Image 1: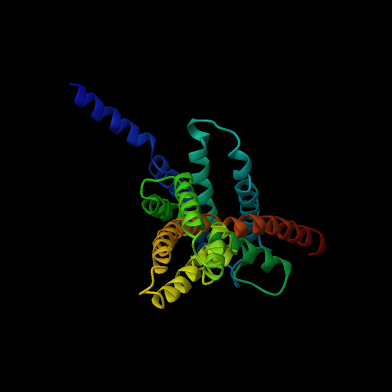
Image 2: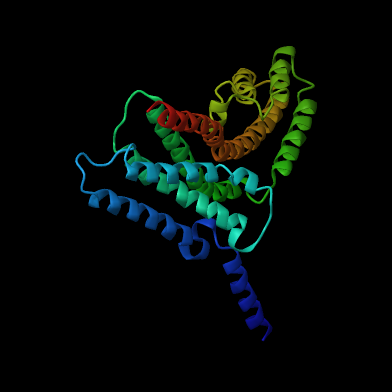
Length: 292
């Protein structure tokens, strides 16, 4: 009996954790799809040569819908600050944000009547497409990368990974005491290396060609080859072992940072371009109503 109750509660919990893309059996996908279908059918049925553009009644209608959608979509950032349930829960709002945002591809394109040029109107359209494409990237990485983040950490937290690195640094510091000045300097550079250092490209690529730890390991191994018959090679072997463990720890941390950067980098495009889009949209609307 207890097992059945546990199974039922687990099933109930599973429905509560439905993803925002599948929210309410894809309710907002259906609504956005319906909006796109109506827009396309209306465009095809209007008996007008050439087909309607932004200056026609059809174009103004779609333009109004598109502009209102863009302004509403920008409210998601404010919406995240308010926690509510039900129809206007954050999950429902995010689902609507995604699917209605994608519907703008159809709505805005038909609004233009496929007329583009070197002007503020096309600029607004291009900025909108950049925002949408960056949002699509964000959805993709949020669907895939958290699993890679979890697998990469191997059931350890970021704090635990850093604690492991600090412990290795302390051991390296002690093990390097018998080394000569040149070898000790290589170890010192490794100890002073910031695991969070490097530019955006290094974080995204996970490639650190000037990593002091890797350089120290290669140089010390070269030194050790010339001292194989000497007792003095023993400290180098111990330091080499610790550097190898540190490089493995750094690889784990940098892969973790890479996944986090891939999760966050799209926001550096999505949000600033959204503000640029609002400015271009305002210029587009003003120019249409006051200068046309």
